[in-house]
Structures are given as C-alpha cells and as structure tokens.
Image (cartoon, rainbow, N blue to C red; front, top):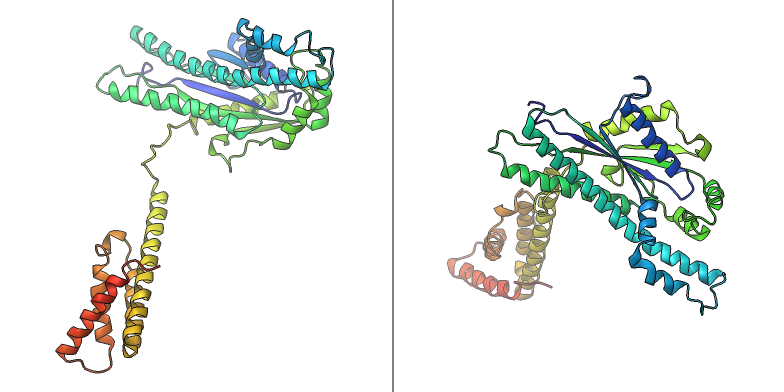
Length: 393
C-alpha cells in the first residue's frame, strides 16, 4: 500500500475527574507539550509521539460561549428580574444560577460532540483532497477533550460518535472499491486520563475560583464524587487504554516526562492495537453468542417437550392405570433422546412426532402381548389424549 492509501490516525484523549481536580491545567500542559514537540522545540528523548494537528475541546469554553450567546439573554434575564426578592443573594439565587449554568453545560456537551464529529469529517475531507496531488505523508491528529466525564455514559457518547464515523466511512469505502485511489478512513484511538484527586483538594481548588465562571457549587461536586465512574475496561472495553494520575495539584500539573511517556504508550496502543471499530449490525452475532443462543433454544424446546410428555403420561394413567408404567418409561426414553439432540432443527415439526413416538414406546413397554385390535384401540385413545394435551398448562 503506498503512502497515498495509508490511513491517518486520530487519537482522542479524554480527561476524566471532578471539578477542581486539576484536569484543565493538565490538559493545557499536554496540549502545550505536544505543540512544542510539533515545532521541534523539545528533544527527541522527551516524547516518542508527535502530531501534525492538535485540537483542544474545552467544555467550559463551549459552555461559556453558550452562556453569553445572544439567544440566551432572555433566559438569563428571567433569572435576574429586579422584582425577584432573592435578587440580592441567598440559596434561591444560587439555585437559579446553578440551574442556568447546568442548562448551558448540558447544551455544551452536545456542541462539543458536534465539534468532534466536524474534526473527524475535516480530517477525512482533507485526506481526500490532498490525495489528488500525489502520495501524501501519513498524518497524526490529537484531540484533547476536557470535561468531567464522570459518568461512563458521557464517555460512551464520544465512543459512539467515533463508531458512527467509522461506519459511515466504511460505507463510503465500499462504494469506491473499484477505484484505484481509494482513500482509507482515519484510524481512531480512544485513550483516557483519569485525574483521581481527593474530594477535599477538589473543593479547595474550586473555592479559589469563587466569583469566576468556572466556580461550581460545592453540592454539585459532592454529588459527582458519589456518582463518579472511573474508567474500567472490565465494565466497558472501549476504556481499555486508561492511565490514572493521583492528587496532582495545580503547581505540579505541568507534568513530568514519566507522565508523557505513559501518555505516548496508551495513545499509541489506542490507535495501533485497539482502534475504534464500527458497531456490529443488530442481526450479527459472534460465534460465542450463537452457541449461547442455540443452547437456550434447545433448553426451551426440551422443556416444552417435557411438559407435553408429562401431560400425556397423566392423561394416559387417568384413562387406564395399567398403562402407567409403560407411559412413564416412554416419557423417560423420549426425554433422554431429546437431550441428545444438538440442533433445534433436528426436532420434528409440530407435536405430531412426539405423539407417534410416545404411542410407539407405550405399546412397546406393555408387559402383555397385545393383539392387533387392542393395540389399535390404545393408539386411538392416546390420539384423543394428545389433542387434549396439545397445550399443557
């Protein structure tokens, strides 16, 4: 494969942690570090990775833009009317301001995901345009996403955006399979940096922001601390590439070479070994899932057959107690035979085959030799019993 067809790489680094944990300071340092590496201002030993393009999606900045947008002025005014008895302060005003910020923050999550999708689309379009002018250099892009991401569902939203992009790109590739200059979609890696800072430190750092747009009410931070879900590959495979740093305060958040070495490792793993894959179609199962589904189907079918056989035995005994032993033996024989069946398709159609086998076994298990007339009578009786027992309760 020549350079023109080689897929680019997009590495997405997601910061996870409480407000005041030092995430944003660390994120800024990471972005600045790789920008310096990009410009060639760092020694080759300081980091192994370099990126051609670096983007920083800061949720606080997105929320601030939304909060100050002209479209929000009417909403803002509704919280701060002069006639409001709480306008000079107090818990009610704090609650209203928090609610307003919360609305902006929720909207910022949606806007930030749009920014990510636009960045992925942009990389794909650039690759397509540049390929028209001959072989192109393999390019790496870093996207740093700075938010609390304290719930797994929030991180999964980012993962789904990447999956949807890969799926759409795959469909585009299929439509161009006959083209010699087919462009591969970027390979996307998802890595996580969990800033695990103690609650007391987060609250102290947050107090220093009092009076600024970045201040978060203490109650919200405490609630987030109780509900935070640390990245865990055992609970979500897409969180496999995770690195944890503990209790970094702001003046140490410039990060060490050891941290960048670990970041290089997990970022490289996320794109080279564990890239994001498109979601599987709902009707496609893995071999393990198919085996499990087959086993469940067999157990269900055998259970239903057992119910029918028990009903047939009961009805047979009520008709003629002399047939009890033969009926019970017939049930055991047929049930054992059914348990040895490996595929549901090997069962007979409907329930008629159960009746035929049951009658044959009952007649065969009787002690006395039956004359033809007696055997026919028993078969007719059992046929009648079968229709009574077609749907046992």
